[in-house]
Image (tube, rainbow, N blue to C red; front, side, top):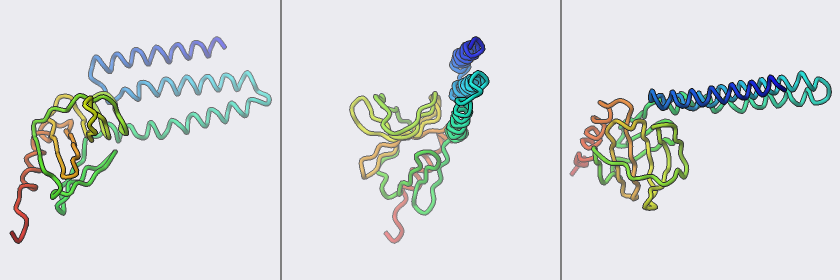
Length: 198
């Protein structure tokens, strides 16, 4: 039992130190790794120690719990490259495609406004989305009670606000500063083009 206590203390220490390091050095993309890896290691170690103690009867149960914990954490770790990657947007066939988590297709004809230097409203809560450091992707509610769709990957780059005929408010930016500045210009150029035949 003493080894289990030491393992839990070490895991907690790694999480605390790693968390502060992520904040200090702006390594927000790695926060989930810092939290999950020591925690998984401690849980697996604890279950294996219990397996040694309870070799009879409960040993198989402990081993099965270990496997379930490991398998349960794999999808979480697997999402890290997706959440950490930048927005992938393309404009084709008169449609804006935002790929990745909470992917969306926005017909260019439905866009009513593009603001290339927008301020994201104060967010009250996440209704169906994901937040990790400076990354906020999915559906959120503002303090004024308005629903917005966020595709934000940086606190430091330009934000584009897209408004649609369905009264959707979409805020998007990129980790890459140049992409964040260029994106609204590309979008405006397409949605302001006159319709063919007119």
